[in-house]
Amino acid sequence: MELPVHCELCPRRCGADRRAGTGFCGAGATLKAARAALHFWEEPCISGRRGSGTVFFTGCALRCCYCQNFAVSQQGLGKELSFHRLAEIFLELQQKGAANLNLVTATQWLPWVTAALDEARAAGLRLPVVWNTGGYETVETVRALAGYVDVWLADVKYVSPALAQEYSAAPDYFEVCRAAVAQMLAQAGPPVYDDAGYLTRGVILRHLALPGALADSLAVLDYMAGLPRGGFVPSLMSQYTPFYRAAGHRRLGRRISTWEYRQVVNRAVDLGLTAGYMQEKSSAREEYTPPFDLEGV
Picture 1 (cartoon, rainbow, N blue to C red):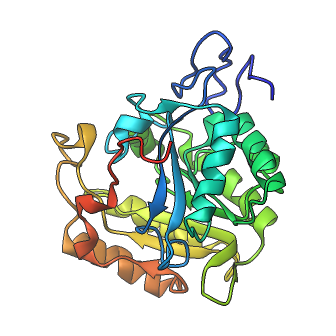
Picture 2: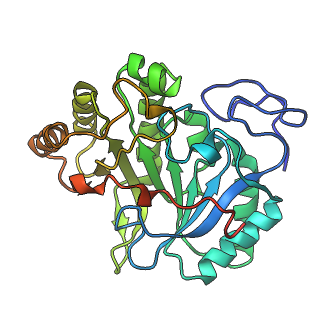
Picture 3: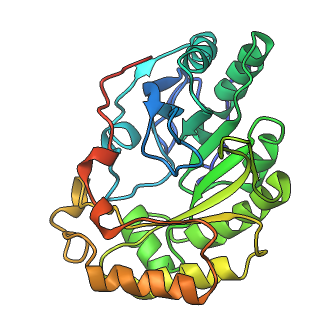
């Protein structure tokens, strides 16, 4: 495995020499993760009753001011690991009965993760691999994961460059996300489920409805409706809670209203985006955020 010497793993293309320092994402020369455990709060076709074997990786290419995992994504929480240890973790999650391997925000560690997957598969790993991403991926990275990733669990956060800049410091978010999603769909193909109802191949496109951003949520749904029908699983989420820097924000410092979320759901129904998931409004609870206590790492 070679360390990135001019890192371009994410759309920031910051050019960091990861041997000597950290990139925009906060990742350096040594792999870090904050939790590896069964997780029961993903979509039913991912978590089910068995739980999803979820690894939360340290760092992120986005700067979401409302991130529920901010201690891990932006404050560096995590334990240093070798890729050999990561391979062991993958196998341990399989032994615990996980339905799949769910890799959360792993792009900044791509060479480490693929090396660990190679080693774990040689030692008997047979679980489908889920790439759990904020949607801010390069096409090159998506292509590099062909043969490694079975299921793409991707956010489509914004269409508006202004919102993407203000909330995530990524004005090019939609342009980048749209190209990445097209490549994900091409690689994964339409959804495939096993006999127990778990998704074993395909793409889930998530959208978290934000307070005060109704017009942008509707624009996201319009974009999704233009994608091949039946080619992905839509997932609308109402669980927004004002974490991190959002608590005092003029628009983000509250939960989404019932009226706002109902408008989003109604548009999804009108557009035929019903072959997926729509959270209940009551889902806005802190319990969706696991304790980052270094369990399993």
